[in-house]
Amino acid sequence: MFPKLLIAATALIGITSVTNNLEILQKQNILSHNLTNHNHSDNHDKVLEIPSGQAVPTIDLVVHKDTMKGYNLEVKLTNFRFAPERVNTAHVPGEGHGHIYINNQKLTRLYSSWYYLENLPAGRNEITVSLNTNNHMALTHNGQRISDTEVVNVVSNNQ
Image 1 (spheres, rainbow, N blue to C red):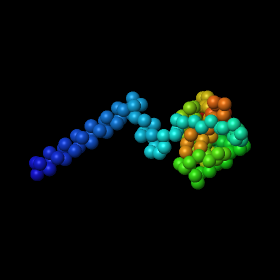
Image 2 (tube, rainbow, N blue to C red):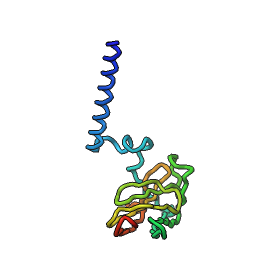
Image 3 (tube, rainbow, N blue to C red):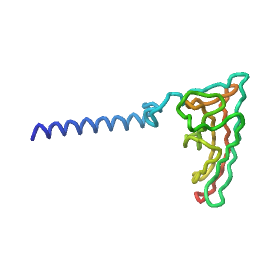
Image 4 (tube, one colour):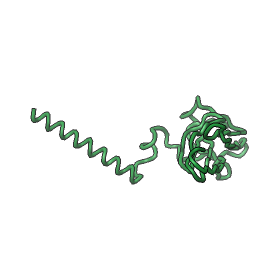
């Protein structure tokens, strides 16, 4: 009985130690973006410049106040189509997905032209939608990310 108890106690101490170390590393932002948030390609921090001769995508973000609560985001695109069926695959010119950011924090991926945003914090909020390749690289043209940003000022949390 004692050896089994000793083994269980040692295992528990090891698990607790690993958990505590992970929490410390996460707080210090030492763990990589991929390890703490998701487990796919390393392309999230990479960019793909649209080559000359290829049609340059454009994006226009329009924020509509919902009549009940929140906001409806409308994304108008040219030279680009959403291709959710090919996410995490090789880049194909003119297709991919979007990323929605609220105050420079990524909220989610975007796979279509409309997105309902239920809540925003009180105050000034920057909503940005960027265009990304199927394999998550940010699209750029002339060194600038292809994205659009709108500012929404929220007076109270009643939206």
